[in-house]
Length: 136
Ligand SMILES: [Zn+2]
Image 1 (tube, rainbow, N blue to C red):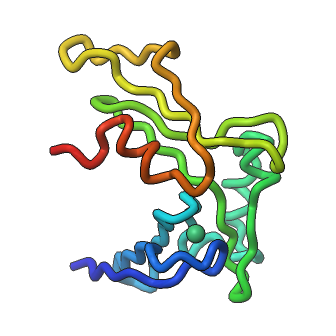
Image 2 (cartoon, rainbow, N blue to C red):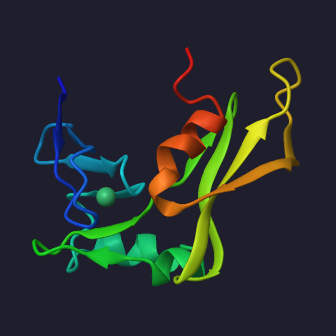
């Protein structure tokens, strides 16, 4: 059984950091304040992390934040086939935004890049809301 709670994000200080304990010492963190995510496998010394980082886009690599416990935080990437995508987009870590792409129409489930909208880092929730992640 998973236990969920809200904690303070070490990266942005928001108290909207969602902590989900999956059991067996495996915990996932997702901050709704800044949109960054980590989990207990993404520790600086872990082989898993090395493998994860290898396949990341450059921007994601550049944006990695290591907290004081050694966990590596990176921007989240949402890809929901029924609603759309939210991902970090930009050419460098100083100038990037959340890109949200909405599924155009619920019948064809087609993602259309003309529905792409950019959101500031702290507007991560708005980006999720734009693609309808909070709608049932
Ligand atoms: Zn945060």
